[in-house]
Image (cartoon, rainbow, N blue to C red):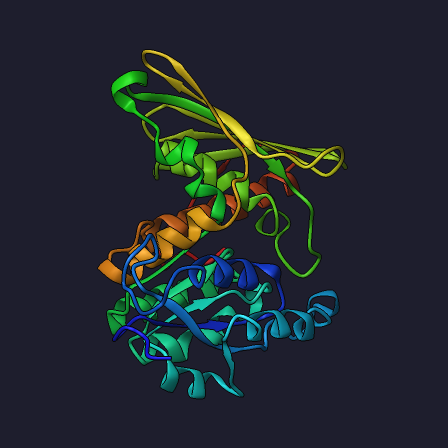
Length: 309
């Protein structure tokens, strides 16, 4: 089948269902028409390797590889081979520790790149991705799908007035190989930053076995909070506190909103989230980790790319 010029997308990492869900959404429209929400873009090739250490993810690769093959995606044997086949890349490897290794060839090749959360598994790796993207001028962004729920995207400040604060919540399960809040809590934390914006000055973490409560103080004096749960029913949501009224945010809406944001990014080359904000989110998480170690004391959020935790 003939695809529209410069509209081919490659996937790196078939160890999580995100790859399948995004492929299904993007490939759901007629690839040759150039019409529809996905602007004629098509996932055409994939490199399956994702995590090298998380066995419960690695064992999913054959299943997810078969699923994308059924949608017409060509399976390739290396990232170099993938880059010969496609014009832009979605990196969905579930383990942030492989993101730097997998992202650098894409950035060096100048292929527009989306990296599924987290940007990386450590602060040095996250900064290295940022510096490479800046140095090679390769458009790159990373995000949780929760940033693009309708409640956030359609937030109307003409009705709420200025955002005075916010509270968000999400699951906060841990993965032992990553900073605790970088695994699942990043979803709700990203929602908080999507509403409040960048500029958090300090964070304080209250921790128990089943719950986390983070209190962030922004540089302009506003307060934003996040509640993470490791028990009970899985849920995502929050409240925005506005000058003229409050708004309740909805929950997870599937991967279509994220897929649309990615395709629009590929089309415009304008990241909907700056990497500097993504670095601040990771710095916020690492500061919250430090707050836990210090018994819940407030810790400054140090988001400069040259900062070493």
